[in-house]
Image (tube, rainbow, N blue to C red; front, side, top):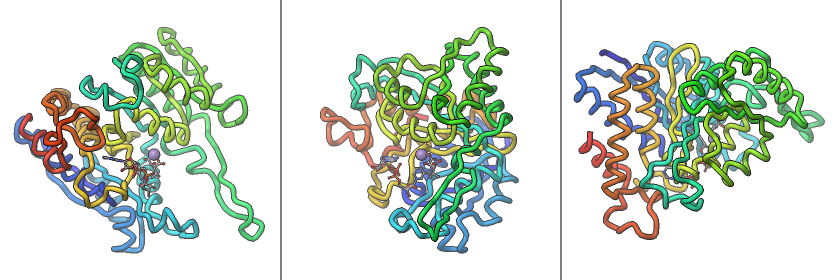
Length: 356
Ligand code: NAD
Ligand code: IPM
Ligand code: MN
């Protein structure tokens, strides 16, 4: 099969991890007889430096013309510490999600058996944890009206959802639940927020179409607690943009590290595949970033955008084998990991390629 992929590496470790993600895609193409062609595009701080715009028009055009996008990360400390900056790297990511209509962000939380002891959660509560988050990605407080008034002394961000936005993400989540353990948890704050009451109303309506799915509703505060108390009680979780952002960083600790969590941002057009982590300034340029989130995002691309199930499985299997062989990046190493098995980004990539 011929496929055209746009790599949008972005900032910080985005560059380092997508390099490995792309190498893995190349190896898959070679092994399975596909032809993947690539283009690159700018976003975030890198795009601001080059063009003044965190999301150049060319990036959107190239993305729309591609079969899938491999995305790294955006962000730079310069902006994190300057609340007054009007042009910001993150606008690039939010902009491309909106421009491509990527309303569903799938974030699988899969614990590889070998990483049972990498997590700070006790192994007996973790073993077998397997959650699929559906984070709504183009609505909520992220895209509501925002601004300042009273000479800048008051600021607001409107939390807003429309029925159709909740409906379409709920349908995706229920469809997925039907292929899994048929359990769905919807997370909101309906005891306080009107937008959450609409959310809950719509999820209850959609649930009627899926009588086989066992549905529960949890408030975000309780859900955050339950996720750590008993991660195995969850199968599919569906939630809004902000709650999903926060809950999945928390859930990364179930899988051992932020460096393990992949995601697929999909909608009606080209899919974008992105680790859930950011540009990680604290480790940028040190060559120690865990590339597995990017590699597993590439696996999601193969599966979801290209329908290449065997290829996707081969990638996940290679990750599994590398972990079984004892290799770790720093973030997933534990006190018992021998020093010579702690690899940098590039060396981890090489190990993966050797297993593929
Ligand atoms: P972060 O995800 O970049 O980092 C959080 C912590 O996790 C850091 O200690 C980092 O070293 C570690 N980490 C993350 N990815 C890792 C990996 N692959 N391997 C090993 N360790 C890893 O979040 P942050 O520090 O809150 O944000 C840094 C910047 O990234 C900010 O500018 C933020 O806006 C941006 N950000 C971007 C995205 C994205 O592009 N999708 C996501 C989150 C944050
Ligand atoms: C993520 C990030 C982004 C978000 C930021 C960088 C805009 O945290 O992809 O999880 O909040 O969606
Ligand atoms: Mn996030």
